[in-house]
Picture 1 (cartoon, rainbow, N blue to C red):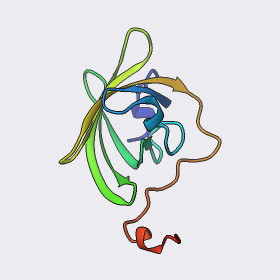
Picture 2: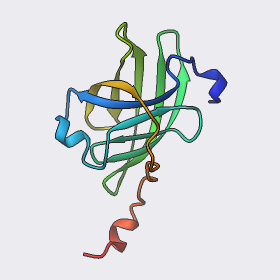
Picture 3: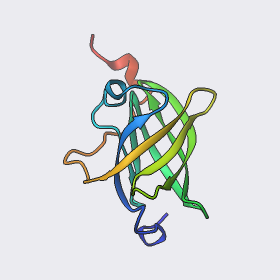
Length: 129
């Protein structure tokens, strides 16, 4: 998806501030829980999940597919989001064959340090204990 295809009210970085599945301490374990909607190498960081996202504009908001890693295990899933009247983003994230959670996110600035790429399963065995 290109930047011009994303409605301006959705465009940018969003700080996930609440989920139905995980507590506030857990969602920030790898750093601030974030989702980007820019059309350029979009990312998701939530709990122990690092993922790449592909968005699609729908009649009611956005839908997305994602692939990444939960810790070192490869995972993928889907999600959707829509803008609420209060300007926050409300959505759902689904892990294929696993959990799902609703989320609330607030508009924020792009992080100074980029969200890292999801680790490879092979990296799990290269770690130094």
